[in-house]
Each structure stands twice: as structure tokens, then as C-alpha cells.
Length: 251
Ligand code: BTN
Image 1: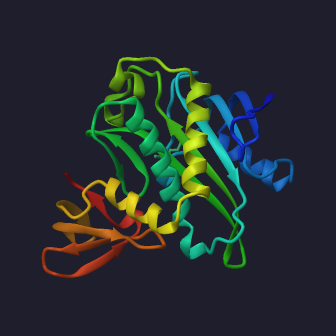
Image 2: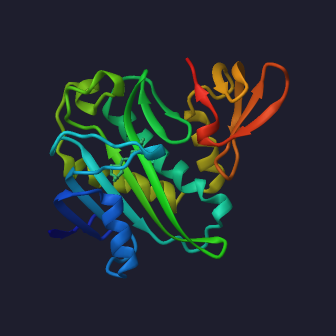
């Protein structure tokens, strides 16, 4: 293990670099439980043997080619019902970084996938620890495809290199990301975050095709509630709030 103090990143001081971990999220959670990690630390790995994706999927990444890291954050006062705020802030930081480095059309696909055109470039897995009704600590796991050229077709994925034609140094991108994340988390108001998130949200205000347990339908995304549920107006006029497992975009 190597621990670097990155002076230029005021609020994220301890960055722990590993060659291989099962998952940076798992390691960060273990360290929190053992009280061995301070707040605003970052765990980074070149390779994960069991990288975790959303909905029980595996996050696949070529060795040393992409950014795989988890931020350990101890919110001062964040109610469980508003925990999705961390998801918005993280998505916006990735959105800004990818926008700066690539030419394509960047969107946040609800709840927090970052897309360039029709391909996914980054994913977020946030795991919160709860005390009473508050989030006591949060592990914000991020996988950003940076220098990987080839992906399995069914992943429908891309990387910064594929989109910009340029390779990037992973540590400088991490440092850049943390600065942007820091800005969104600590200096922007809730209104600024909410409005920027909606502006970047794929399909917001547009008629889109979806599937829920009742079948295929057309609807318009009205927004995302505080608790992260997707607010959709169906063609029949009904408005519904969906959890991630309850709705699917169908094109
Ligand atoms: C998704 O499925 O879109 C979420 C992917 C999150 C992957 C990252 S990689 C670093 C961190 N550690 C993990 O095990 N998962 C997250």
C-alpha cells in the first residue's frame, strides 16, 4: 500500500493506492468498520477481482487502464431520505470531467450512469451506512473508463481515450475529479445541484420509451425526487415514481 498526501486537494487528503483489491468499496467499508480510515479519504485500485456494479452486477475493467476508486465521506447531517443528493453531486462531477475531456454529447442517465452519446463511460455505486435516520458514513464508488480501448460488446461502453483519441494519466484525472467533486459537494447550493442535475439528465422533459411491470409505455421524465425516485408522466396522464428495479428505458 502507498499513501500519498495530495496538497492541492484540500478536502481529500489521504489517498490509498493499491495494486489489487477485491473491490475499493469493500475495502473502504472494512476500514470504516475497523475505524481505520479518516473521513474524506480515497481508496484507489489498479485492479479489482470482484468490482461491484449496480443491481448486483460486476464492474469489469482492464488492469491499470481505468480509474477505480471509492471516496469515504462522513456527512455532517444528511437524512436517509435525501441521500440521493450524494449521487447527484458525484454524477455532476463526472459529467463535468468527461465534458472537459471529450467532444461527444454527455448525459447523466438516471440514476447516476454517465453516457457519451449512447455508450456508458462511468458508473457510480454509493453504499451508505445508516445511524437512526441519518447517513453516518458513505462509500462513493466510482468506475471511470479512461484508457481502455476495447470493451465486450454487450457492455455498450466507451472510454475517455476512445472519445478523445488521447491517453490520460490516471492520477492527474483523479486529482482533477476530486477538485470538481469538492466544488459540487462543498461550494454549490442545493438549488444549483438540483438544477444542474436536471439539465444534464438524459431524457428530461422528453417523451421516451419505458417498460414497467404493466408493460411498455411512453412517458416524460418530470424529474427525480429527493429520495432518488424517477418521476415519470405516463401517456395516459398518470404520474408515477419509480425505484431503479421498477423501470427500464427501452430506447
Ligand atoms: C455501475 O454499475 O454503474 C456502478 C459501477 C461502480 C464501479 C466502481 S469501481 C470502484 C468502486 N468499487 C466497486 O466495487 N465498485 C465501484
